Image 1: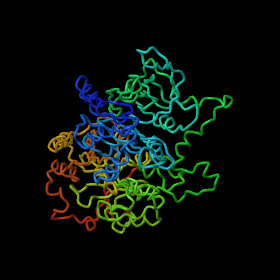
Image 2: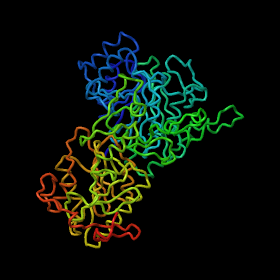
Image 3: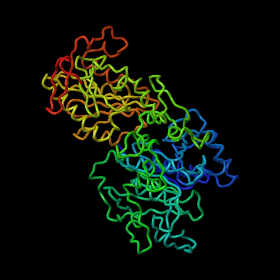
Image 4: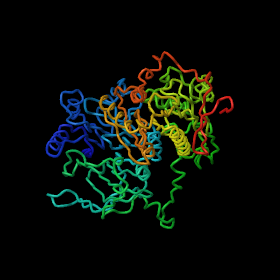
Length: 616
């Protein structure tokens, strides 16, 4: 795979004719480029430019390549962006941009999305306590990025505006034929003011940080991040059409971090410097610097009890954990002072506003782009209100897989661990078709904490040993849908004689469906899958005998069958009639047969036994 080609530009100020003329020229000589990312003010700074701007918005002039912008303020911004925000196609979580017109996408507030394999994070606009709809970012936007800083995986690109830099020395009186020369810039906030961007960059540690600056172009030497193996490169871009002829467009072609080896990421150029964001931290109090709070605590200030709140006696025990709701896990676990509510996370994944879930109301009202009502899940069951204490219990009574549910088929359960339990499949492809199911009401197995992953690994190892004693291998697969409610990892045994064909058959099925699997062929496969898992996409993955993992991230409009894994396995096992549970004419009554599989984790093996003598 060739690395994507990305263009960046600074403040546009509505000069779209000049911008896209330059883009077309560069695209013809050095392209094709995959996307253009704009930082700084995108809309006009004067009314006389709005007509030119509207030529593109209304489709009379064409935008040559997909263009994404932050800096959502200026002349015409409220009217144009209000229309985009109300478009039904732009409702819910649209972290990859709200479509304004053909090839133009508005990156609103803050977020993270994948662009041609690159992980892109952004903070749009300027800080404002009032959280206005356009041109500013709110505290919630900042909080979301602080939570992202704790997520696994590297961020390739971070877009911000403005960049809070301090120009140490600049020659503002050069010869007439030369632009101003920057002799030294420190990307830091030593002179006071809002340090939000500086703090976020230090926490997120992107490979590239691109920002609008003080009407100049500046490419800083790569700097070494604290507690990270990779370096960060900073580019500050000048406005489009600036009089000083400062560079307003820059191109890069980086390989996504997810496709790079550890040795490639660790490579440090000879001109690499120390991180500029550690200057304040290392300054001694005698020099007048104020020591920052401990990083391990400061990164949790949004969703944990801070010293300030404790001092004022505020109690947050009944509030939702922002970290858990946004990512599905919280590193502080039981030590977290906020509630880890699975119903709230499900509602959040369906586009419900966090403030509405947490407080019962949202101060932004109609200006908020998220939903202010509880949404039904994919099975048609209304979820309980996350803000209430009864919501979780109501939902668990409806779910087939929650152990507290009256609908759970307890006679199929074979064993219960601390984080997972195993059960025979209700509509099995073969007799020993097993489901490994989280005890917690979680939509997938990939976003659960590491201690859960350790137990899952023991279950998988035990099943492999059990089936190996029968002359069989086992295939594990999971369909991770954005609409899923309770995850289940399916384990299907196959004859050892067919084990070598499993990978080829899945690849052949993918080819017929019009996509190609991503392949991970090492012992760390599931770890890598968890590292790069993006909850904004549905995902199918399968682990075939030998440990190879095949995965496919499903695009939003892609027609991907939920029963894909069963269909392929049925073909492999010649069990075509058992693909669709609804068309099966015979369902084996496991309860009457009273056959169970008891998994003995301590021994690392499995033995079948009669259900009457063993109880989970």
